[in-house]
Amino acid sequence: MIQLEQVTKTYPKASRPSLDNVSVSIEKGEFVFFIGPSGSGKSTIIKMLLHEVTPNKGRVVVNSKDVTSMRSWKRPHFRRSIGCVFQDFRLLPNRTAYENVAFALEVIGKTKAVARRVVPEVLELVGLGGKEHRYPHELSGGEQQRVAVARAFVNRPLILLADEPTGNLDPDTSIEIMRLLDRINRTGTTVVMVTHDSNIVNQMRRRVIEIESGRIVRDQARGVYG
Amino acid sequence: MRVKYVLSEVLVGLWRNVTMTIAMIITMAVSLTMLGASGLMYSQVNDMKDLYYKNIEVSIFLTKEANEQQRADIDAKLKSDPLVKEAVFVDKAEAYKRFQEMFQDAPDLLSAVKADSLPESFRLKLVNPEQYREIYNQYKDTEGVDEIVDQSQLLDKIFKILTSVQNIALAAAAVMAIAALLLVANTIQVAAYSKRREVAVMKLVGASNWFIQAPFVLEAVVAGLIGSLLALVALIAAKYLLFDGALSDLQGLLSPVTWGDILVVFPIMAGVGGLVSAVTAWVTLRFYLRV
Image (tube, rainbow over all chains, first blue to last red; front, side):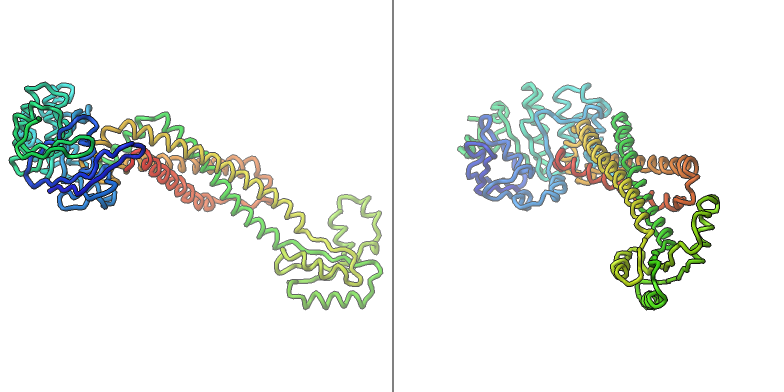
C-alpha cells in the first residue's frame, strides 16, 4: 500500500537531512505508528505521502502510484484516496459539523443528494449522531476531532493519515479517538499515525516505527513506545 | 450545484471587500476608457486621412519665363508618370479666376493683383498622396519649374498632433492599467487570505485546482467586465457631450464618431478588461496559494 525506498530528503538550508535513506513498506489494512522526538522527520513522511514534499533521492509509492514523479496537477485526484487528520482539527469555524463534512464532499464534485445520504451516516459512525448542526465552538475538543475524522473518512479513503491526532486532547478523550481510528482500521483502511503519546502506543500494541534524526532505529510488529 | 457554489462565492467575494472592489472597478474603467478613446482616435485618424488625402493636390508652379515648349514637356512627362493620377494645367486667366473666388471678400487685395501676375501651374492628384517627396525630387530641377507645393505637408503636421494625443491616451491607459493590475492582485490576495481555511481544506481533500481558483478568478473577471461597461458609458457620454455638443462646430473638419465605432470598441475593452483581470488573478493565486 505504501512503500518508501531509500528515501532521502534534505530541506534547503538544513544542515542534515530530515530523512536519511529511509525504507519502509506498509501493507494494506495495517495500523502503523511513527514515533520519535520532534524534528526527527515523522512529519516529513506524512507530507511525502500527501505529495506535499518530494524526496531528493529514493522512491515513494502510495496506493501503487509513484508519488516521486507525480505531476502537481495530478495531486488533487490522488489526494481523494487519502484521508487526513491533524492535531489542530482544521475545521471551518463558520460551518456546522454536517456542513464541514459535506463541504469536503461537495468540493470534489459530489452532489448535495449524495452528501445528504452519506454525511449523517458517517457522523453516526464517529459517534456524533444528534450533534450534526453544532458549530465547532459548540463542540468539545474530542468531538471536533471526531468531525475531522468523519471528514477524512467520508470518501472511504484507502489510507488514513493522522498527524498527532490526540496532541490536543486529554487521555480519556484520546483513547476514544483511538477506538474510532481502530474501528476505521477494521473496515480495511490502512492507518498511519504520527504520535508522541506513549500511553496510546503501549495500549494499542500495533506496529511501531521509531525514527531518530531521520533514520529508522526500530520497526516492531506489536511494539510499545519504549 | 458546483456552478451555483462558484457563482455564490463570486458574489460573496465581491461584497466582502466592497471598497476594494469599487476601487478596482473604477481604475479598470478609467484605464479601459483611455484604451477605448485611443482606439476610437485611431480609426478616426484613419478616416480623416482617407477623407483629406483624397482631396489634396500637389501644385507645380512654373516660372514666369517658362515657354511653350517647357510647358508641353512637363505636361507630357506628368501624363506618363505612374505616380500621377490626374494633372490639370491652370493658366494665368484660370489662376486669376480662382484667386478672385478665394479672396472675394478682400477687394483691396484683388485690385492689387493683376491678372497676369499670377504664375501658371499644374495641379496634380497623386495615386498615393504620401509619395509627394518622389514627385518633388523628380520635378524640382526641371526647366521652367519654379516651386512645388504640397498640401499634405500641412496635413502631416495635424496628424502628427492627433497621433501624439492618441499616444498620450494610450500611455495613460497603460499607467492606469498597471494600477488596476496591482489592485486586482491585492484584492485577490485579501480574498484568498480571508478564505485560507476553506482553501486549505479544499487542497487537503483533493478539490481540483480550477475549482479552488475559479471563484477568485471569476471575481476579478466580473470586476473587469463591470469596469468595461462603465468605460462604455463614459465613451457614450463623451460622444454626447463632446462630439455632438461642444465640438459639433468642427463637424466638417472631424469625421463623425458613429455608434458603430463605439460598439466595435466595446468588445475590445471588455476583452482586455476581462482577460487582464483573469490572468492577474490567476498568476497571483499561483504565487499566493501555490495551487
